[in-house]
Amino acid sequence: MKIKILLAEDDSDFGMILKQYLELEDFVVTWFQNPEDILPVLQSDFNFHIGILDIMMPNLDGFSLAKVILKAKPDFPILFLTAKNQKIDRLTGLKIGADDYISKPCDPEELILRIKNILKRTLSSETITQYKIGSYILDTDKLLLSHPKEKIRLTIREKDLLLYLLKFNHKTIKRDDILDNLWETNDYFTGRSLDVFISRLRKYFQHDAEIKIQSLRGIGFEIDFPEN
Image 1: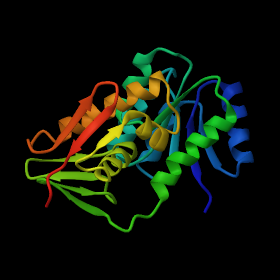
Image 2: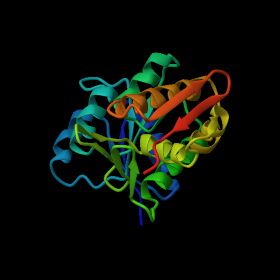
Image 3: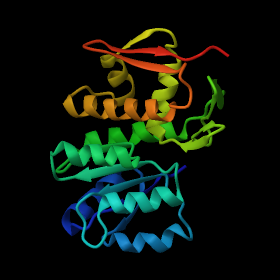
Image 4: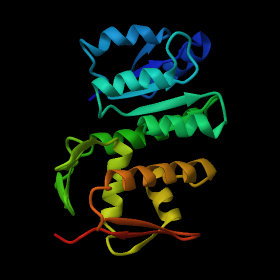
């Protein structure tokens, strides 16, 4: 199966180089210099496997574009390109629902690795598709966390993190182990992004007081999901 990539990048030189490199890796790339041209595609033949969106674009920035795409395609994986090193940009992207980010100019091999890691999680088949977590039900196929009071659409990264935490129920997990296994890198920004995801999971489980994801300073997290 050919992997189809949606690329939104207004810089003509960088966009062309990136498109050509991705095509050398056997990806099928549809490149949009004007992000607004993507909007009609959402209503028709949107058959992409992953989106790579530049943040700083005229008319429609990458954050706004991602919100529109994820509203129509909630489980669509997105990787942000940013020319900035400001952590606010990175954390904003993660809060929107992006799966990853990479700074420009990016190392082509690192970009390919990040794309493949996302696709490995997105396209992998799972034998168990539903998990009972206290008063919640996790449906990994639909990326849906359901509770009688609300239904929450998860990102791929949120689902993967939650499944990883489930493996260590009633145990302590080291931060470094989570970062090494799920992010495959361990630096300041990935550590901060992990904190963002943990905070979001705590908020998602707010309707069940027995579910606890407790931070242990300098160590990691202690997980307590009720037995069913």
